[in-house]
Length: 376
Image (cartoon, rainbow, N blue to C red):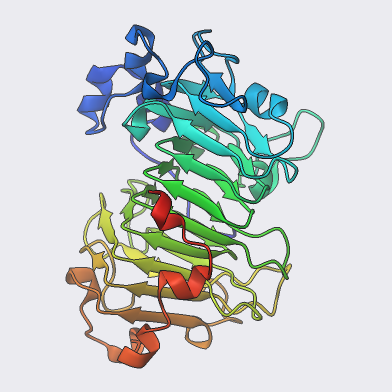
């Protein structure tokens, strides 16, 4: 997505992902992948290649104890519909694509801790491609999910590209995962990046892809949750990063929906929280993205029953991405939020739903007959 904000952090995300327990603890992050090599049963309670619960269960272990040592190799082998991939603890440095033919796929992190199973790469929009040109925002994604019916549990999806490592690259968008399929669900997952971390999208302007994120951790700095999906974020933690490269606010924006005008449901954040590693008031809650590919978009975002920490600018929580498409002309609203970042000091800057309106701002209204929360 467009941005004129430079990106930098005082440490490398690549370093903590590959670090052992000591380095991870020093950064305040739980150690994970370093434990993988010592596990006698890398797939835990989820069986093994010698004891598959179903014929369509495949096992991935970078240490060679599964059917495949990379996630993409397992995806390639799992042709058709209805496969389950059990992924052993470890850091899988690769890009992965689940194409439209591989429907009803489930990925399970074989640990109870999502930080133990990490899929990560470091392409950015401006990274040169081996065959010429650059990757662009979509092409930068570590993981791309195009198929319908995708489910992931207890996995970390990350992009550890840093602008400080590539001062010659101007396209700083670096996507951890791009999700386009309908009925895509993520339970207890982590999404780590900086700009454009989680691309919750759809395959076409006329496709209203439904997505559900429950008990997930999502972090970044610029527009780090963005796209045109009909997406529900329930009991999630949005974490904004510090920015030592900037002297003044805003440091970035949490959400940047690009909902198609014909879509009656955009992003819904409910029963969640927004915290920050940055000083107070440095972040905006959202700005609308009206992409050049859809100049008629009317971004929609409802944030309700959510705690907004002091990192959010309470006076002016929304901003324009383009003067031609002011946020006030979009579909932004709040309801019963709490915390210092939710204080209503300038009412016209914080549109609120009424009680009757809030009755239609629910996960059921957004997702219809699909009930992924029953699978948690």
